[in-house]
Length: 582
Image (cartoon, rainbow, N blue to C red; front, side, top):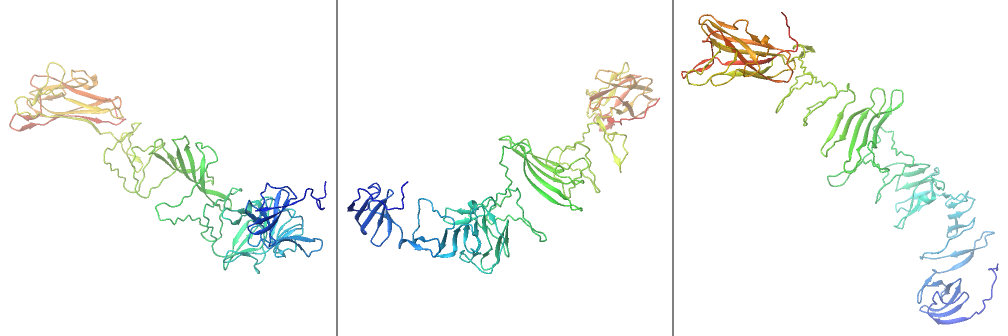
């Protein structure tokens, strides 16, 4: 290999002349040319496929085209004596106000340094001997950069050495991440921890008073507030999984989300889960309330869960759960309030309490707009005051078992399970209102048992629905007249006489007998049992007289305005249990 340090004779050497700087593709290594340029006569030398020039003022430059050149700034590029034994000459470059641009790498051998105006302890040092170099940034063999001087931020945000601030521990962060060169031309310092580290020593003074100490993994502001004011977002990437705010003051710490905008919309506390495709039951975020018990054991006492109910696209619905530790210190499953998105867009279902022993207390009014309230167990309303049901429409009592119970202070006073007993199930009133003669009476058939009917064609009947007990009392009340005659009565199931059963046909003797010319209002009662609850039923009153002149009179008598009592038939509910005997 040739010794490049020796001088070599370049064959074919010649000096050429011309106008303007030579073009980059002109000539070969070793060519020398003298050219007339706008700045005067210049000497150009081509070396390693590049043209170099020295002008009349001694500047070293590189031509930049047919009539321009890039000049390395004045006054000089020259070797100087370092003054250090063993180092010999050092290269000095002074660019004044220009930038020093290099297309390749700047290489410093071990032990080399870059300093300011020859001051050895202010600059960058590359080597092992890191001790006794305060004020310098060092790069040693372990690739550490150590800022040994104190970092001081004055009013102009200038970084300078400041005395009397004191010492501090190292802060460790990777060099490749802490130094960030932004598009705005500034250089920013961030702190993180990995294999390559930057060590910032001492403290940073903020403004006229107060210090910010960077110590290991802690930033400590000695007084006042710490404000982070950024043009964009602040993103904290917490690899450990927790972002903690701590304080020892009473009632603190507080997390404040403050909106200063002059509009109707404020800030948002948002839990975003975007790491995977959503699945029903996914927990999207938790707010937990934790603390110690009397034995200093750490527990979760309350929580708020946000979950996915339905993740199907276009049918998305959510779940919000509020819960507390319930008696045994366990939590997470003791949910007391659940809001679930419904099956339609305008529906939200709410579940309150856990377990049948849960108590829900409403201090004020309960406004229910829905049409149904359901319960898996017993539904009891207990009050120390009045209990008022005020309905703007119907009030419906619907017992699936058919039992209705009335109590006083816990003791049932109604017939067993039959608080409806005595309820009138059906009522019929028949009363003539005609002014014509002979229309205000019914002649009871004396030849056979016949369903009774008025002259106007109205049957003596009663319609009702059978109560839960299946037992009904039918009463028939009317005014009857005869002369030493009577009549027998029976219940019929049709308009043509059809006996209900023999026990409801009173034909052993006259049910009503009128001695001589007596006349009065009479009532006949039938107790019908064993019916099917809820059956729509109609019974008819049938009669058979012992003589031809036996009448039931009712309503208006001709035109004079005189009236007889109306004919009344009633169906009354009987209790489930009745006393019977023979």
